[in-house]
Length: 214
Image 1 (cartoon, helix red, strand yellow):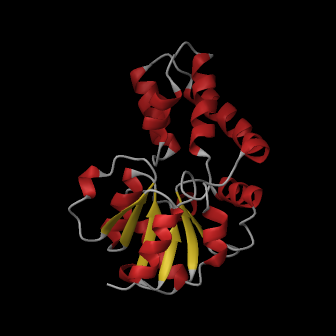
Image 2 (cartoon, one colour):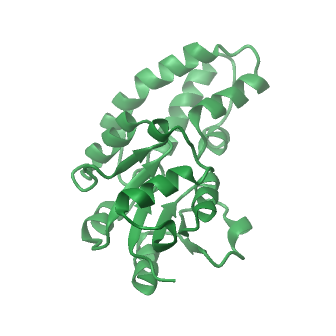
Image 3 (cartoon, helix red, strand yellow):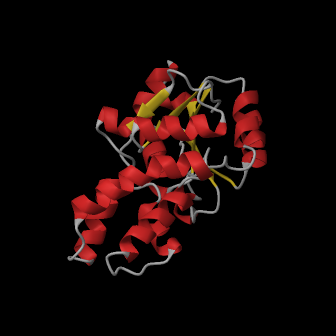
């Protein structure tokens, strides 16, 4: 089935923010005697609503002060991203040369999405074309966020390609009926038999996919 538009996840797909954020959360957890590696934090963190990630941590480590951790994490995230964030390799060039209608759909708050896109030089491309889960009150893996993004493009989800680096994101896209490109090094083996799922390891492979199905 041909696609007529592309929906991008932001964190870990367009920008290399997830490892930075996981490193920050790890540092804050260490202050409270929870000694997890960045990989362990990333496994909990990737593609998951932050409130649910923190809820799980507090369930496993009952002494954690949830409100205090969230406040510190929120306060330090945007300055960290402005200082150290980089694009995922090839993302900016791919997006700027993509002729199809495009938008961003992210589990993150708008302030974070816009900070990320601005830092790597993509905010102008997605002006008026951002959907935040906090604004529609629905987070991946629910398909609702992807349905809103397709509506923003004026397309049915079945005519959209979602580019995603997380399992919950892929589940959201498939649930909405979209074609989904599973990007990066995440283990997507659970989806390999789905006709609407396409594995792409980098933006070069994504370019080939888009040319093939658009």
